[in-house]
Length: 178
Image 1: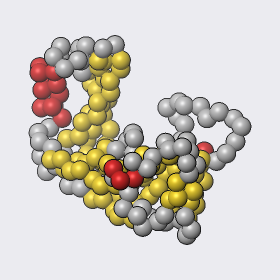
Image 2: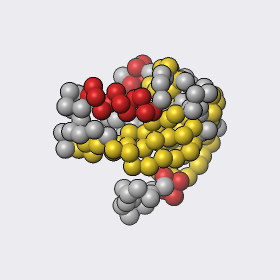
Image 3: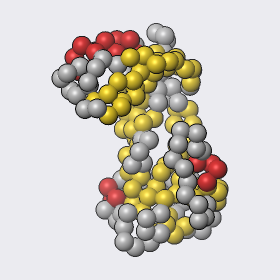
């Protein structure tokens, strides 16, 4: 963990959970020059010291360390996926699910990254999802392409389907054979 955190700004108004909401509008940056006491039920965003740079054929998942989870500190309960081709410092969603305050200190190794090699193009993966998973692993229908975007030097294909009536969105990157 580096020496930068973002803390939710206290206030009486509810934060709307909508697509256009930006966490930066509801948090303030602070430094961890001294330990930060994370109250029970509280959430902060920590930023790693390390810059993670992955090639187009590797992705990763950030995982909290169990020694701290056993004390009630959850790291990256959501958004743990690290995209292929990324090169940045990671933002850690840190939540206290314990019944007591937790003291957060800079320089502590709070998480680890699990790396996975990716194979094939997004079209090949879509074919696999359509033929092997449709009706087998819970997709209600074959994924339909809803758009594309360019990010991290990759071309991303966006798809939508459902599983047991719940919406599922997929984003698959294609490095164009590089």
